[in-house]
Image 1 (cartoon, rainbow, N blue to C red):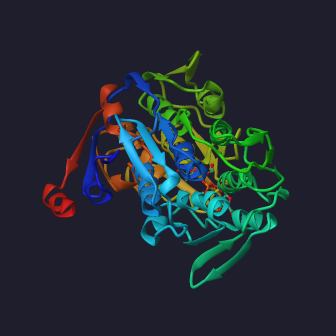
Image 2: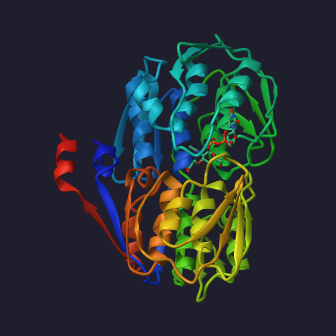
Length: 439
Ligand code: EPZ
């Protein structure tokens, strides 16, 4: 049984048709966070019993991770819409298969857990969104500092360590993935590991909470120094994934962009502070009540400067969505991308809709226009896809978006949620091709 109902091939046959100009009004519930859930699934490899993970988002990357765990020998089952049970006790292989690893970047997150459990891992370099060079040197250097032997053979990474040894690791950059891999691996190492200049993203706190429930001894997630005292075994647990701050943030921007009034429920307000501050600077009313955030806007945005930074800075994953919103600002806005080297691939697509954006190195300069006009566009990656949907919602006339398979990697029923708030959106399927793909 599958969590997600479409194969990626079928998703690739789909186009989102958007008739722009409708204000979004209503409320949207926040699903569980893809970027935490993927890691919790990977970390469940180290458990000695079943892990029942709830509030799982229905996105294709989660499905890919479940397939990867199954390919290793785990038993993975789905209950209801959002609960996954992983029984890792049947895992027999520490060599994840190429096609699944190449499908997404997050597959590298099985490296630390597999090494901790089996003492040896062989895997190819991971794939993922084309948003710039994405090396894994920090993951490998950290494991090597913990005593692992790392080598490359015929395009495969080979990592071996009968048991990792705790040590002091200083990351050159607060990499989210490296922090997560090393934190996981250190749980079953002998002695104490300290990760300095660690990433401080909320997902890392969620993972610390999950690992702690499994019996790990970790402190400091959410700060730049994480201390892990190795234990000999982890147990089993039930755990609910944290809310997805990037999906919530995307809907906040969509609400502002359509000059609507939307309440996003089930959020952790402090996770959205950087975005809320930037939206407020453009003139948006952002009102928090407990775990809800209401976003209301009645005008074109004022121009602003946005710089993506590691958490608690402005998230790189919302850089493209906010750029789409700023295409109609009353002046010139700038966006500086400090995390990834090539995350402006949406610019040419927005230009087809009438946006005026120039890119100079890491900075995009957006000269606001009165309005966008609908066009046929293609999502080059996940968050760029979200940006183009926002642009389509704002634009005059009809937009058709291809490349929906990227969007489904990280958004849980985006068209249904937008339609419920008044957007005119529909999925159009090339049914002849889809039928072939299903076979
Ligand atoms: C995670 O990617 C997220 N992915 C990304 O979300 C997110 O954009 C990113 O963190 C930053 O917040 C998942 O959680 C699955 P990094 P990750 O390691 O872990 C360089 C989305 O749209 N680097 O913090 O890969 C790297 O090249 C995705 O949901 C090294 O140089 O991010 C990049 O420039 C996209 N060597 C920077 O650090 C390394 O060994 C940040 O990467 C590792 C990273």
